[in-house]
Length: 303
Image (cartoon, rainbow, N blue to C red; front, top):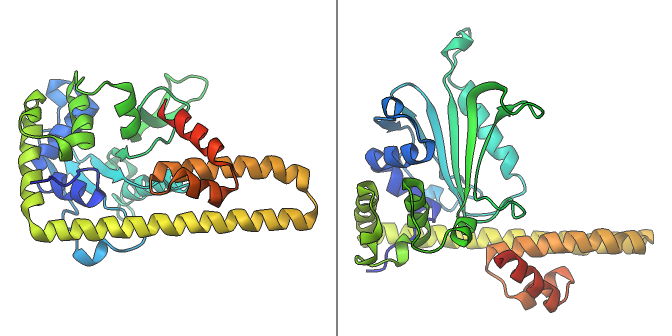
């Protein structure tokens, strides 16, 4: 039986929201808390995924959970690139944080909110790291924190794959990231390399989900919805690029447009390459760049 990929956001949520023990282990692997502060259990506040939801445009299939101390977690698998992602991520965390209080309640009742996002693309291609943690700290004095009540952990799965050699899973977090990247293509013999019992449990859950015809059908529906969404974004960018060219010609700004248009075309090409649905020739046709230029960008992305 071919396993479904846990990088599909629908399966990601079904896998982790359905077993809080597995989710708790993932959180502890990421946060690396002292033994006396480790998370003992979590409660998922939005475990159900309604079939009619998975085809909606731009729906976020995130997991909202709280632990015994009242801390909130927003966990998601981000499968598509979006320019609005940073603002949306901040908005979601802020909304969860502010939503803890009823009118007139004291601010001291507010508990920390932690975002944990796995990206199936590279958000920071110029950085050599694959994991990031954003908090409210002073830019000149990073040791000074205004508050630790809001933080966002970001993991770039493709970059992890490039930086860490296949099979090299030195810690609990490394095992989890490797699992997300490869679970759907590993047989039972290959699974013996995992030391974490929680991941072996996750494999059992993934097998159960993969054997369920209803889940497999919904997974295909979700993949189709994401593919259509990417196509819409592709044609929207193509239309915007063509409109920009026409406006530039009309205004007689050939020199300025050549530079600005080239930069925009390169940015668009990088976004389309990250989607991995079009050939270099198709991307070249859409952006106005040459096929050779697209292949060079593709090679840089792989390095």
